[in-house]
Length: 400
Image 1 (cartoon, rainbow, N blue to C red):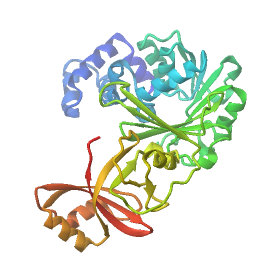
Image 2: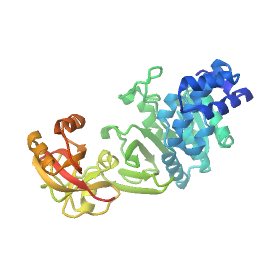
Image 3: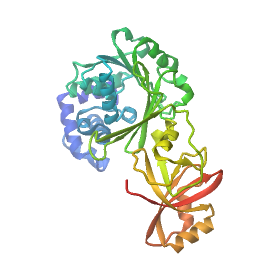
Image 4: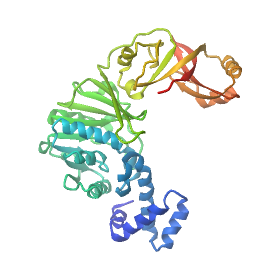
């Protein structure tokens, strides 16, 4: 899509095409396109409307019902912050006293809209003209155009003295190809500019990839990893007056409804968990806990230990309730042997397995085929290492 096609969607004819596209989206694309053309919608407008209808359908998982009135690009939707994460960030900024915020690299406006809904005046800056136009349209559709305005331009040129807070989500994909950028110095804006914001603005938040190297975390910043319903979705650096702890793992839940739960684990990120033998119960920590280097803190809460210092599975004598990891009961600990494992599962009539792994080079689906399962029982297999040795744990999950 280009600016001309987007402008066409903003006309009364375009709105009618979007409504028609929403009624036929989700099925066969050729049938949907034929239906719009038969209704008199020009081919180019029909294609643009159907693209938006499909993107809006996909966006419902991130934005809920508000997605139905928003505009998206494919890349923009993929990179947009989930609604529950953006809302929590906005609430934390507002609670810290941020009243005016610059969103540098605002994309389609997911974070800016959440901040505006929290009562913060947001100035968005976006380098891509189409994305900037869509962000402005999204603000208008949400009834927030008085609190969120967008300018198309260079984020590094924005006068940050105009605001008391900055949010920056540097582009981590190459323009035109969509390929991921792993070198922070190749981000847009570049990493040195992004980290320098904390020295210029008292309240600075930077959204970063969950795989961020801890060595890149600025001194004094709080690094937070966030998961939603068990999926690790992002990391953020809270700088200046916003930094509260060195490391934080935040677990959000939406399966039971928007904003239904939050759990947080904090710590220094440099402690080491005790190492011992496998015990009766295995804990599989949430990815946010692992990436935040807070496994030792969780081990302390659970009175648990690692069985290998390089693998983030914890073992305890008791099954203690925790939101920070899944608990399984171990029935067998075996040195890995395909022949022995296959025989044991056959003896126990196990025909269904889930396969978890950390520290193992085995491919779960290949192993599943090689096991030649048959039976009416189920089990969980954990492929890992114990004291450096390849090991398989046969387990049964416990209720959450």
